[in-house]
Image (cartoon, rainbow over the protein chains, first blue to last red):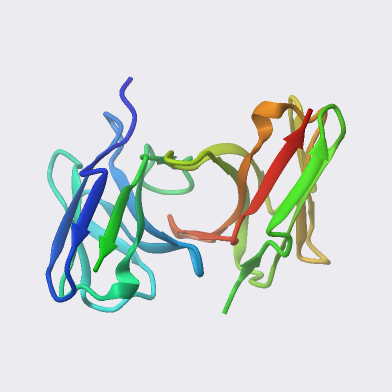
Length: 114
Length: 112
């Protein structure tokens, strides 16, 4: 079974631009979560989607948004990029919709904002 | 507000000995605790978890201990192997939510 895939793997953007990152979950997984990893803040939860609906949200500004499609693939968008948005963005998928399901992480997208 | 803390950024252990990684938390609403292992250029990989109603869970060389009164958990790896060298993240799940709160990570190095 293929794992979680994220595209692109690396991205360089300029301050003020916007960016869209993509995540394809493991086949059959309907829950997709996004995390930001930075050296200073560690891994921080952004949001979680299930059946095209955002169920949980972390403490990030409105510049960070996401969506999920009917095939469970998910995208996250960051508008008006700031230097501090440089990070590794990780996507994780989970099988179950309620309760707790083990999260499987993708390799991440490394975003550099210059 | 760091709800999950790993106070040791790094740990060095000799091959064959025990590795003990520690984690402290502050939120009493956490109902599951997990350990993830991360290699460079890869996403975190799930290692082992423990429910808040238990105090120990064992899986092969990995054992997680939970002390709820102290709000502390630890991961024991016995015996440590060179392939265990990685960054280990402690994570906690908030009750009723598919959301993990991670610690800062501890870089474990196993020396031959």
